[in-house]
Each structure stands twice: as structure tokens, then as C-alpha cells.
Length: 196
Image 1 (cartoon, rainbow, N blue to C red):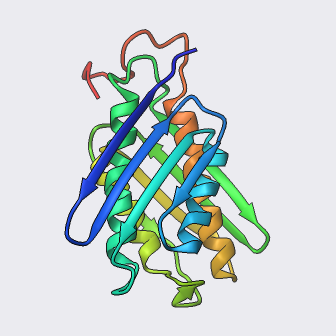
Image 2 (image 1 turned 180 degrees about the vertical axis):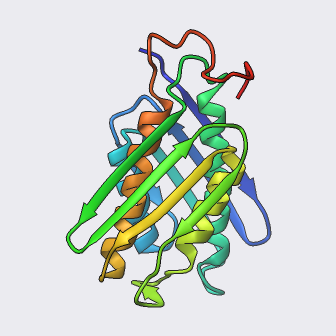
């Protein structure tokens, strides 16, 4: 089995971030962003995506959670892209429906090299713990653009903000795990263009 592992880092006046990801892991993770609920979401993403993930963030959380979460998304996308490498043999597409009590969320991924986010999620509350609910979209936007993937996140139902967010992160993890997995029938890249 391959060991597709990579690291990425970013240091600005607002954040200092280092991330290491292994696509061929078991879901082990060590996450510290300074935003407790965000840590919980990244844990769910890693565990259900079977990716080993280390995330260390020092951010200006005294301002708010925006820079920390957005910049973590940027760096995570960069690390995932590096770990994936030339994309040969991968399934490219992945999707998952995740129920969390009242919530049902779908995520679909195309590792196309063309960034795009379609996001249809409504949270009933402004905050989830100490994390602003609007930052869920900012995170997925940052990941999709720095990774270069087409990502759809759609809420089908949901009443509880915690459940909705958790279903979204876990669905993304499951969909991504499928998309980066190998298929022995694919010998190059799965594209009529010959490149992804």
C-alpha cells in the first residue's frame, strides 16, 4: 500500500499553521487550532475519511475565529494536494450521505483540478460552541480552492447546528476517502483530457 503523506505550512501576522496529512491512514489525529468546536469537526473529518492528520494552529482568536479557520482550510487543501501527487489510479469522484440524528448532509467531490464550491447549508444558530456557523462555509471554500477540487455540500434536513456541521465534515471526509482511493482498472488519470 502506498503512503501518500505531505505537509504544508503558512505563517502570517494572523496565523501560524502547520499541517501533515496521510491519505492512507486510519483516522489517527492530533489537532489543536484554538477553536474547540473546529477541532471536533476536523477530528470527525479525519476519522471518517481514514486520514491521519496533524494540525497545529496559533491564530488571532482574540479577534475572532475567522483567520484561524479560513487559513487552516487553505493549508489543509495544500497538504492534501501535495499528498495526492499525480492523481494516477484514483477514482476521482466520491460522495457520501451522513445522518446525524435530525441532520442529513450530502457531500460530493470531484478531484478535477478545477476549484468550485456549491454550498447549501442553513444553520439555525449563529454560533456553534465558540465557532461562528458561517465559518463552516469559509472552511470548505478555502479547502476547495487550495486543493483544486469541485466540492458540493448540501443539507437535506437538520434542526441542530452541531449535528448539521458534524454531518457536513464527516460527509466530506467519507467522500474524499472514496475519491482518493485507488481502482486497479484506472491505470492513468480518470479523464478524457488525459490530465487532472
